[in-house]
Image (tube, rainbow, N blue to C red; front, side, top):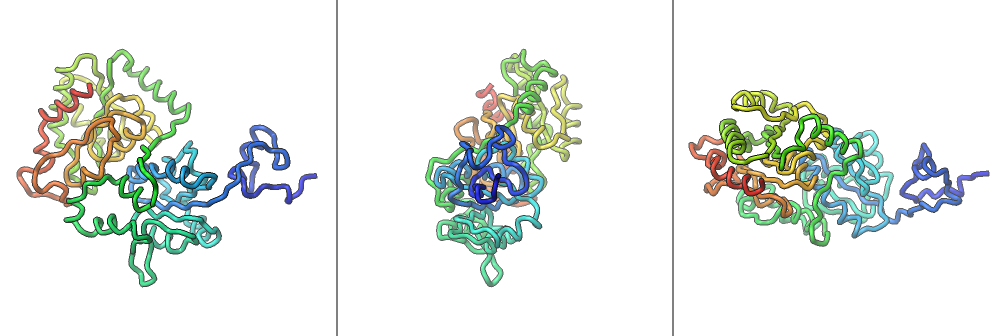
Length: 374
């Protein structure tokens, strides 16, 4: 007769309202289970923001698992970012519903709480959570956001001082590891594709007859709407694609973008003298991952696509302007391209300068960089 006393509640596989995976897959129960893994620490991570930002912060997971072995890691994020964590072996639970995670903050005693952004809402959650140690940012009792630990001061000051932001020479990952008190080197973010998603990649290659080419170049035009000047002029894309097609034999070109780039990408295709493969602009996040997985080289602005390319181990050529190029890292696979204009890293939403950080990135210069990786 099975009793409650036999249940190993501290096992990482334990499910409170349904059979655990080892039980479903192998028929074992707690009294004679060889899959038991005791949870010795509970770690909470809080990170919302844009999907590309959430994806790059997953770099913290292997480092946390190494520092806190046998830990259960909970991650609070937005609903739209939940798919990023599919198949990720380091995350025990992804929490996106406030009605679940809000009461949980006071019900669970965490060994460490990491709030990875100085946002007001996430800082409220960090302050509310029961944690033995807190890293990153939290809400002060007087209602404003403050660093939760001294190591977070530098990144916090950069967020409110444009001059410090422009002077910065450290990557985002180096700052995150520093204020999280994690050892270097930095782990690269990683997307864990399912077997079906890998099959979707193969099907896309097969259906578009891409396997006959020496290399596949992905061109992404999307960069969100927060900083319009992140995007290269449309005519430059057209000229670059035409030049690649003319100068590089046996190269396939695949066009990427999100829903906001539907019209732009159509104009781009209409302007070309030949056809290229269009990956579409209405893909789900995981579909987008599988499609990017088909390319060898990805040319993109600082964007979600850039982070996806990095996490899929692609050669990524990323160009940037109003935002910090120093914060980016392609981990030795690809290149970060930026202008030398004095007002670089302005973080402005609009620009009235005749010469700016985008139009001074010439097609000739970009073609030279892209050509190196083709």
